[in-house]
Length: 84
Image 1 (spheres, rainbow, N blue to C red):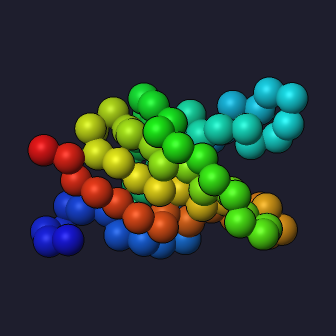
Image 2 (cartoon, rainbow, N blue to C red; image 1 turned 135 degrees about the vertical axis):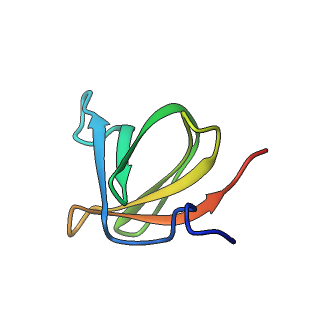
């Protein structure tokens, strides 16, 4: 990654989720470094012990991997890919 405007992995992320039959079923929007992103598509979802990962496309056209630590109920940005 290059450039100051690109997101970096951080715990400074807040995620708003759709809560269907279970809590935090899928992310709908997130705020990273003070900027709000709308999730336009959930490309993939996978699980590991204690965590759930979502690969999402945001309204800026980029792809983000969001990790939800279910034990601590904490979100992190685990990966970012600029599309273009």
